[in-house]
Image 1: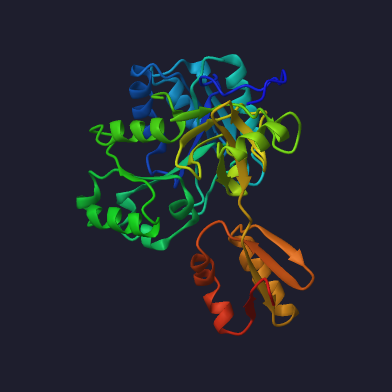
Image 2 (image 1 turned 90 degrees about the vertical axis):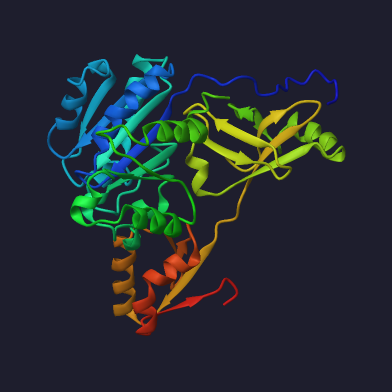
Length: 218
Length: 150
């Protein structure tokens, strides 16, 4: 480097800027339950969490989290889509961006803001203007042919979570086949199995998020 | 892991232009190739052309673009290089087919541009995935695919 008084600087430590992680997937796949599992694990690692929920015409998911005792209620903000939920996480995510910005300014210590949105079967995807990283949640109760259907949520998400692996055997769904075909259609991008009732796979999921987007281990 | 949490400036602007010129002669400039779609992300893990693992974590008011300088010192500079967008070019057989393919692609939420009578689909995944979705329209002769040279 020449010495001409240039005000060049190398990057230093990580600045405090909360990561924004989308959690999408069909209604009933267990997204809110997954967040209920993630919060205590993240908090135990000293990671500060907030959540934006998206519901069609209610605040159901937000109320559930606010009443869970897992997180301060004012760290949960509801957004009512009023229409197809995918439109406000992809086509025009301004309502969700505003909600995340509000959480960020109210709680500058935040490390991560989860933005949860359901619906639209396998087709919903997140705008990367809204989130830095997004996971798509499916459940074994919907059948073991879901990965073969190759919806955009399955194919394009940064991380696929196959949830409710405990109920697969009761509905004739082959969990191993789901995992194998998911890995294939996603060209070996990350796919994890979880069971929120028994907290199976949650630690691996948290470690994946830390490694891919939170960087709190660096 | 190299943490990169700020865009310090741009390669074409001074004082970075001169500094990068000097560093490049010493083989000390590393490039991060980012896809057009990923420029919207503020956080991601990437590896430079020289194998340095990087964790990008920008503030929300910064956005990656070609030539963004993320790190510079006497030993090394790390600069963003924007990957070229790849396109699938489509040509409809007639107006009815054009309407049909437009409706179909709209339902799939693909990103497109119009170039005269051609429809350009931005590839955000493997080409074959797009061709699979269009298979019936192609087989029916309603559309044909073109290369950039056609």
